[in-house]
Length: 272
Image 1 (cartoon, one colour):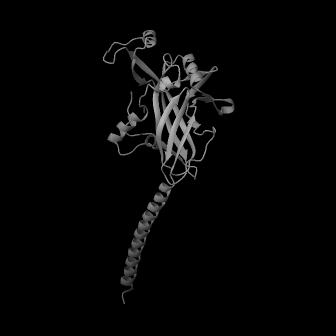
Image 2 (cartoon, one colour):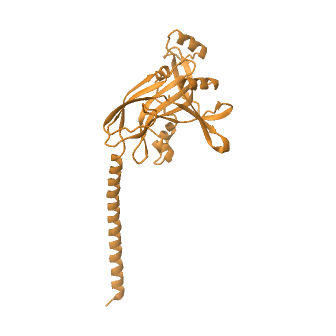
Image 3 (cartoon, rainbow, N blue to C red):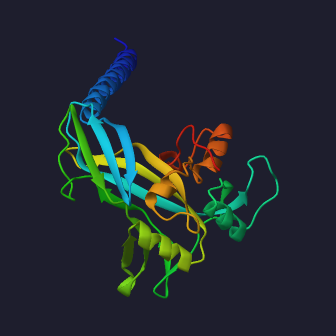
């Protein structure tokens, strides 16, 4: 009897069995992952914005939870970006007008046309401290705190959007200041800022405390010299997504990107 032959045959059979086992395990893992993803998907709230109205310095919103799972900690995310703008008295003109001319035309009820551009990260000053633009979350609840949005329900609620700046405080800890619209406008004027882009989005958490973005609510320009209320600013409707533009250009030529860029890149957004 050729023991070498039997040893080789046994090794071959063992290798085949191992390959079959690994392949079967991978298939089972893929099926399991699909089931897990399906279950996770069923636990994600599905919120739809049915109506948005700005009144004074408040936002009133009607939201439908069309999913089969409740939404928790529903909030309004508010971000702002300092921008530059070029002003025109005619949308077909290439001749710019200055701020003084724009204010006079605005007081006469004339329409002011603008072209906006991102100026890059801007340092702000608050009480003699250097501050940065930050992101705030205002809870959407008649009680002013987070509430439970039941599945398959429609909720009408309101909030007062907050505009946030932050800085490094004592012992390196982050400190922040939130402004309502009127105070925010005065703060911008004190920093000699004429315009900021504002982007508001809807967020919520599921039962497992995972945060889910639910789409944009509004985006507009605050013109500090021309607008006197959140209602006026909200009429300057624009779509903004300054940061991801270069990422989309990168994705067109590469098969990879940074996670942060992937997370913050949205389709069908463009820069003004």
